[in-house]
Amino acid sequence: MSDDAGGRRASIRDVARRADVSHQTVSRVLNDHPSIRPETRDRVLAAMQELSYSPNPAARALVTSRSRTIGILAASSTQYGPASSIAAIEAAAQARGYWVSTANIDPTDPQSIPDGLSYLMAQSVEGLVVIAPQVRVIRALAAQAVGVPYVTLQSTDVDAGHTLAVDQIAGARLATRHLIELGHRSIYHLAGPQDWMEAESRMRGFLEEMSAWDISTTAPILGDWTADFGYYAGRELLGYRDFTAIFSSNDQMALGLLHAIRDEGLDCPRDVSIVGFDDIPEAGHFWPPLTTVRQDFAELGRRCVELLLDGSAAAAAPVLTPDLIVRSSTARAASV
Image 1 (cartoon, rainbow, N blue to C red):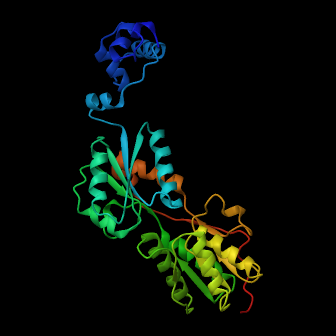
Image 2: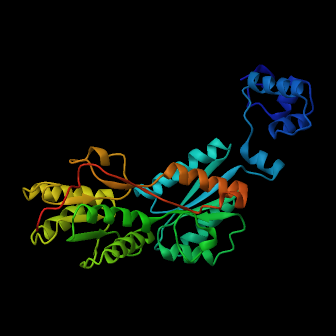
Image 3: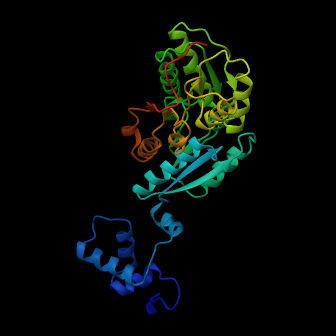
């Protein structure tokens, strides 16, 4: 800390004195005002560096009426998809000179939604991202007066005008079609929880693709996203062996399925082919490496921030198409 700051944190007035300008001029430099001459800007920036000055975000928001903060209202943020979306938004926001504040809400508690909004609004966020996979959260949000631009990262008809999402139905159809084109006709679907919009969309995509090929199917099995559930469901299903392939609604449950197949003394993909969804970082290191559907979270984050900060210019393509990543967990079907 410079002696000019008297042993305390340097203030905007300390910078002004060091640069021999008014504090209003320092404020204009901080906010990239076009009226500042380059030599003046350089002098002020040099003074800031000498004094190790960093602007107070709260004070800056009061002066500029801008917080340069984006709020995220998140439910189930420990799951891979929501957590990856948050990380992608943080990276995209920081690239634009913005910070992110996250309020984690309990989707089973209706009061946590307005409480979370109040917390973020108190920070004067300039935009809001809602990462809430449950329909009830989106419905509750639609009933609120948000007051700032916002976007939801789930595809839903409840609040369609604010949606930016990865096409979960298309991703599920890609996964199912891959198995069908390998000759599989006895395919099970291990679905996610019933109240998750992604799980519902992936189930719908599976059923639509099976129907398009005129292939009958059994009712999807509702899971809970965990590897444990995939394992126990796999052990149960393998007692019947009336299938040659399983499309799992996420990679963690697929991992449990792979474990169950090994424990039964069977081989994947020789005896059973498995496809997952998400392409978690470990998916390529499962044994065998997992065929799965990849969502481009980095692109989702970039478009999300662009949509909030630039308005309708980014809204031309509100739905992103996922990619099928083919690895070693799928192979041509053997007869049941």
